[in-house]
Amino acid sequence: MALDSETNFQNFFQYATAGEFLSNFCIYNINAPGQEIDAAPLPDHYVYPTMDGLVQIVDNCVEQFKIREFIGLGVGVGANIMLRYALQNQSKVDALILVNCVATSAGWIEWFYQQVNVRSLRMRGMTNFSVDYLLWHHFGNHVTLNPPDTVRRYRAYLQHLPNPKNLAAFIEAYLNRTPINISRDGITGPKLNVPVLQIVGADSAFVADSVELNARLNPADSEWLKLSGSGGLVLDDKPEGVAQAIILFLQGRGFVPTTNVQDMVRKISIHSTFDGSEEAVTILENVNETN
Image: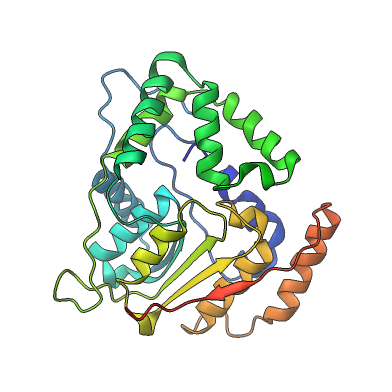
């Protein structure tokens, strides 16, 4: 939300983990309408796609590039879209990697704040209220505990977002989302037969949401990991932990069998040190809900 695909994934794919992922996979980034870098303002008469409409855009991309099967990676709203797509097109998705995924409809608190946010973005542009709300969305419940330089960088990015009205339309589509009907047993709802890795930061605002979804997934083919010392921006905060989790998950499904995970994590840690990142211990909590 408010981050285009380049801002969202560039650091993770082009720097920290480039050698491991780019040499084994062809990566396609999909932006929602009006959310790409330097996007033109959407016309006043433009009807923004619903969440299911955004799923159709993903399917159009799959058909356009003649992709028979793929591994889906989504963050936040993108995770919700990828989950919807996989449920409707299970034969096309080899595996899902979901970060900060919410599979329920909006609650009253989210509805209220986002309605205020949408109205403010449309009428007044990017206000302090919108910036603060989006910072909470990305950094989690303890924004002030994050590195000040990182918070300042994202604050400046959000303050200068060129098309707040485009963002308002995107947020409204997500706000009006329907719940994703999935059941573990396949009796009370459709069963997802796609391997799923969920990743969430310990301080993310969406820990409980990810646990709720995990309780509805097949425990034999799903993983849930919580990374300490991170909020919602786990790809930036903990690239080594995320990369390790993804590679191990994919190796368990027959992908990248020759990748040395320990060597990969060491290289990422060295890169992070050269970037001036503070050294920290990452704890991966792996929980497979049985209830």
